[in-house]
Each structure stands twice: as C-alpha cells, then as structure tokens.
Image (cartoon, rainbow, N blue to C red; front, side, top):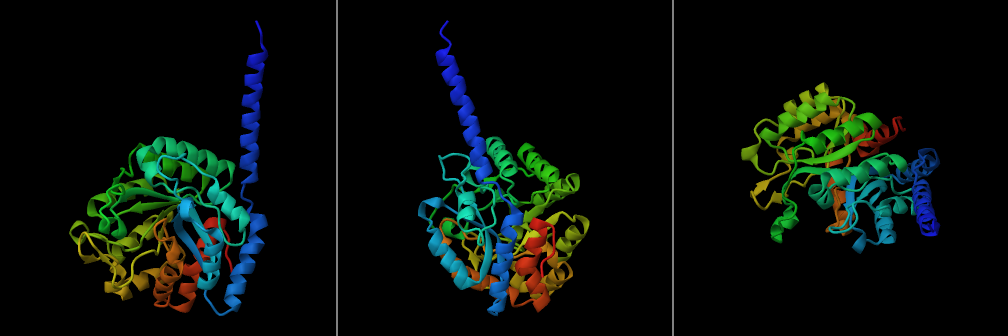
Length: 340
C-alpha cells in the first residue's frame, strides 16, 4: 500500500490546523497592550473640551466600508472608541475576521467585537453560535455583537419594502439558552435586539433569572414601535428589572424627538415623552446605561449626524451622569475597572 497520498493529506490537515491557530493568535486581543492607546485617545478628546464617547453598538458591511474615512469621521465627532461589529454578508461565511483586522490596524479607535447576529444568525443559529463561541474564545474578544431575537423592519427597510429583517427567535429557546450560558461561563457581554412587547418580557426575565452572570446589553432604550403591544414597560418597570437583575445593561441608541416608525405612524423613541422620569432612572443607575450610536451597513456614513443625536440626549443629563453613560460605563463593563 502506497502511504504517500495519506501522508500528504495528513500533513496538509496538520498545516491547515496550524495555520488556523496562527491566524487566531494573530488576531488575539490583548487589552494590556491596547489600554494605553485607548486612554490616550480618551484624554486627548477630553482636553479638547469634548465629551468622549465609547460607542457600544454599531455594525458595518465590509463591502462598502472605507475605514480611513470612518476614522476621520470619529475624530470629527469625538468618538473615542467604537465597538464596530461586522455583519457577515448573506450567503457568505458565518464568521469573518475583518472586524478584528480593523481593530489591529487602528488599535486606538476600535474595541474588538464579535460578528453581528443578523441574517446568518437567524438562518442558522446553532451553526452561527459554533463559530461565535470558537472565535470569541480563541481571539479573546471582549464583547459579542448584537443578536436579533425579535426584530421588526427598521424604518429604512420598511420604506423600501424589505422583508428579510422581520425576525422572531424565542429568547428562551435552545439558541437563547446556549448564548446566555456561554456568556455566563465566559463573562463576555452580548447584545440583544429584542422589541419591547408585553408578551416578550416574561421570557426575558426568565432567562435573566436562570443565568444571573450572563452580561446582557438590551439595545435601544425605551424604543416602542407599537404602543398597542406594550403596556408594561415604563421607568418603574425597567428600574425594578435593573434592581432585580444586576446582569442587565441598556444601550441608549434610540431615535430623536421627531423620529416616527413608518409602519405604526408612532413616535417610537418613548424617552422624549417622559424625559424627567427616564432621567431619574438613569441618574440612579448610571453604570447600567451605555452610549450607543447604532450605525449599520446602510447608514455607516451617518456617524456625524447620529452622534449629534446622541449628544443631544446626553446633554439632558447631569454632567457627571452624562460622563458615565458616554464612556465610563462601557469601560467598566468591558474591562472590569473604573476610568477617570
């Protein structure tokens, strides 16, 4: 028997594994090396008289993305760091290292973030989680991307007649349990897009109770697109939820006072209609609220405009609270330490 083909195949397999390991090590995140660059940039922005922002939640499609232009926009907008998650293109691989390469190329600007749980996740959740868990651990990524459990069409998608983002995955189903358990085991936070509906709140509470050490960032604070579906959520409800579940965080990506959801015709950013009560909640729990801009592939060029909207909201808060929400809360959550 000629063993040469077998030996060649075995050697090829060994080299492939070694190459993958080397690739993973090359992308491995080292906070101790990145920390000073992050801090220097934050302090530089502060010295210029601008409140630095760590954007905890944005995403991009690598197809039409110009990183140099985006970095220049960050400089103009006073964004210290962005947790910019890559959304794997439909039909492509379930995981891409492009986001990690971006963080390596611009180490002062980007905090490595896992791929977004969008189309690939909704079509193949278990396979997506296979790739997510393996790469998050191997590359020591400090934050997972946004997982869509219940997602209505975005305003832009609704206006152009799209239908592929009306997603409904049970948060207490097998994929949800696996994601929560992974975060509980590793301590790595993850983000969820989870529309605010009365019927969806008990399953979320159940998961927060079952996995008390899973770090959950609930995206889009007080964003209610159909008031007829939401009678429970309020400052009092969210405050009680935050008191009971110390593992829950909220990002502050929501529309401005004039933002209307086209499918309901309602102002879906409910913060503005009850601003004083919501602010009291934020002031009492500032480290549970995280600045977020929520850029995406179809609005990646809107950084300046959307940062102005975020700063308008931050300007309604007391100065010390605004500083915590803008960057200190994200730093403490991701790196488990306080920042001046």
